[in-house]
Picture (tube, one colour):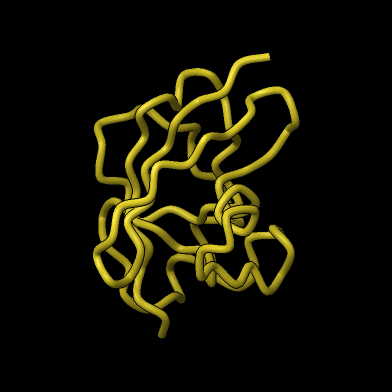
Length: 106
């Protein structure tokens, strides 16, 4: 089993170092919820609500954005060029050191 460390900067600017297992098929939204960070994930990870939107701060190569994620972000508030939905970022070994910032609640 391999854990990765992901830094999540909350809406107050506080950085949280989260240990996330890579062998449990989790996504970033689920890891944030495990650590009780203020990520709603209202739709349960279906890319339908944008309540887990975050900004990718580090220079990690992430999986390609799917159609559902692109469509949701095209309608969401506070979208930046580095916006992603946490529910669409699977936790994999190559994410070690990933740094993201939670988007403002709209």
